[in-house]
Length: 117
Image (cartoon, rainbow, N blue to C red):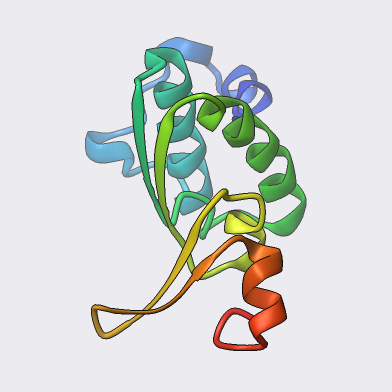
């Protein structure tokens, strides 16, 4: 989850206090810690809600690679606004006000030239 270098940079490393609910962490650091915890738990079902929204594009690319490994061979639901986050999904649902407007792979949705394009 691209968090190890950050943890090693902390004065007390893994023993550092980050405050209640990670108050001393930035949004991106909180997201990377949460992703790392998920990777360690290795659950059969993964729900990611805007998991990379607070990351810069360079870090997001690295984290996305880790997420791709995490989501292989398991049920994964990803909620995202960034196209880069869902591009490799088997099935994408485009929602608007709770209604499914389109569904398919990224390539299928692009060929529709609809909301996802």
